[in-house]
Image 1 (cartoon, one colour):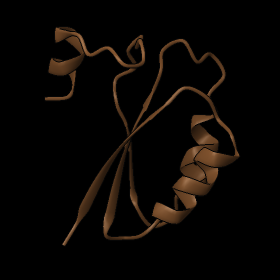
Image 2 (image 1 turned 90 degrees about the horizontal axis):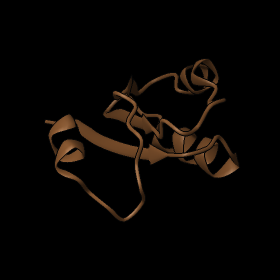
Image 3 (image 1 turned 60 degrees about the vertical axis):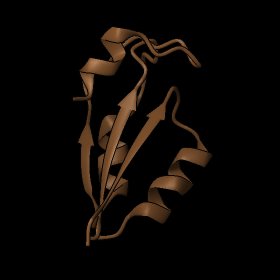
Image 4 (image 1 turned 120 degrees about the vertical axis):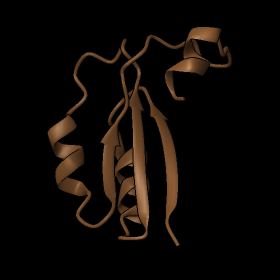
Length: 77
């Protein structure tokens, strides 16, 4: 059985590193959305941290937390 996780982030910090490490398992696929406003996200560091799980970065969108627009809803389908 496989599990898919959609992780929405706006910065690279220890909490995110811990989460990615804990979810790093061959049964998991991680879909990571990085807010478009985040200018210095280290995509390569994130990929290096994940050794077993599938790691996919979604299309970057400018998001407003707590608001889901029609455009945002259709972007992940």
